[in-house]
Length: 78
Image (cartoon, rainbow, N blue to C red):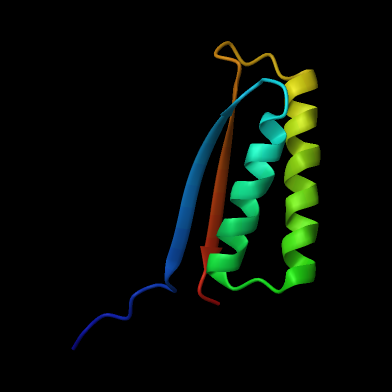
């Protein structure tokens, strides 16, 4: 008998430098990922805005030695 596999996992990893307008690059990538996963337009906009805010906060407050922000997008089928 075959084992049941866990819900399908979709994962994208994005690294952006802490530089001017890099949050906009992250936002654009977020939009595309959300579309591929099947988010509705309103949810895409909400996630995009959250990523912009998170990036700006990281740029301002992070003490990252390599001056990069690492974003991980994970979605399960369910």
